Length: 301
Image (cartoon, rainbow, N blue to C red; front, top):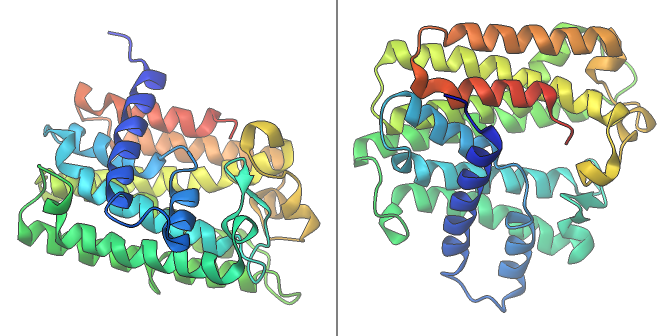
């Protein structure tokens, strides 16, 4: 049977958006801080991380709704990272998802606090999911999820990757592929991997299944960043919702800068092939995961 990935992504994105909106509706909508949170969190986006989490739960043979609390928490953390990444002290970007970045729409201080609020409330949602969700993992599983997600987002994961990425602008930084892989395995990859792992944990998957899904996620996480770097050269700004060419302008360390554009494309394809191979013995319930891997290599935004 043919699998309609576009329909699958749309349905899951709409579901995540509905619950993210419910989370924000708990607060005063006229409060500037809440407006800034809403501006960035509800600006659209691919919702790739929560979709992966639900697809992983489905691949483990469970109702994907069990993963929704982790999905929303991860998307809140991801959005906080984008708000802070866009700040003048970091990437100094004016556009995100086709809209003014949070600090451009409001101000730097409000943007910083909006990011802080999204990050901290994500863990509140994980610890007390009954505020919004009817279906959620048991308390022991939620403790595991909080531990895994906090590690992936923090000094052993995304934040450390952001620090290494920032330092890569320095003129004496060694420009090699291993170092670049390390940056993005942390900065981008950790949160993608923990999204897949969170879906599997929420579904009560066994350790062997989780290990295979982690290999899959590690590969697509790195491929996602390689494609991002390629799109920064070849992408259409109107489709992407952000400027192209900024990496070269800022002399940023990227995969095309280190190994060339053509080799970057081959590298991304190899990573995706390895990802699909890692889940080759999964049944048709893993079809969405395989399709998402193909989407990552062929996306235009």
